[in-house]
Length: 84
Image (tube, rainbow, N blue to C red; front, side):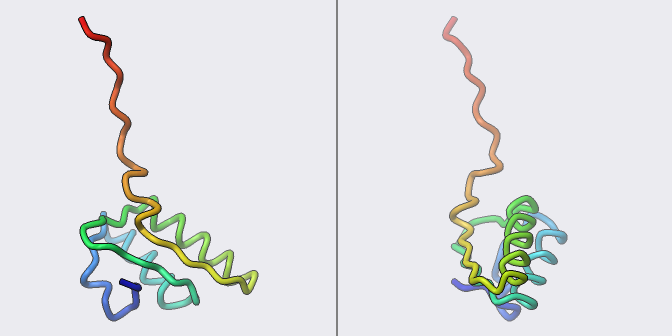
């Protein structure tokens, strides 16, 4: 689903800061932001999108992002443990 100010209540956010960043992007830029069911928008992903969208806006370039690109990015890697 493409995010707009009208459908932000249907999205899962890590915290209020992440919500405010994405709300700013959809309200003040021409960026196309796409969300997929059951993907939590993390603060780190929201900040990257906010920075990229604002840079694209200044350069008058199109910008599109999908939260599938960020899914799992913030998960810690499993530690390797040799068999005993």
